[in-house]
Image (tube, rainbow, N blue to C red; front, side, top):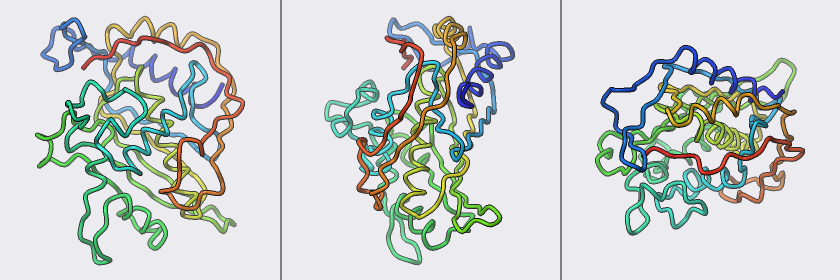
Length: 282
């Protein structure tokens, strides 16, 4: 069993056995038929993934690694808020007729700010500090910008990344660690998708900054399973599990802005069957 499978199964069991239901309460999300989408939730879930030991893709079912990579590059590399620059359709429900999701996600990472070193956006600032001030305790991004929330079609779920470097005794290379803060997460639809995305991001940043990968810590304030997802989750976590896949990142890429989805592969990735047509609450 991979560590990712172990963490996911235990998290789901904990939510189902010890979580709190929102049934009958005033909730925002709705199902496609207009009924309220209730959840069973746990507050303050924290999962740790040691990326130096394995890549955290579930084997219970397949996570589409190229689509994961495409979306994280859409946000962090293209700094886009337009679905016409994205190859999947996961954001279609929140886009307007021009394809914009408003001042959300990639838009915020592309806004330039004044620093002592000059004008930089948040991504370029992270890369600059990792290369020039790797022991800084201020290397972070935040896209939950209150002044722009009214112009976002969806408030950011994964809203903050904090980067921190460590060095093992006897090593001549730094390890890049990161904390992903998420205010809310649909465990069935999004958990492993987000984990894989930000694991890929840490791998990419570590490579272009001459570092090794360390830990990814995932903090979820509201970790929930929707009512219509419960039987799907119960079947999913009862499946057999397999060894973690081998992660490959094109070693020739030295500039973050040169990465493409083709530079990422999962080898020896054995999984259970995919789950299709998952109902999504909007």
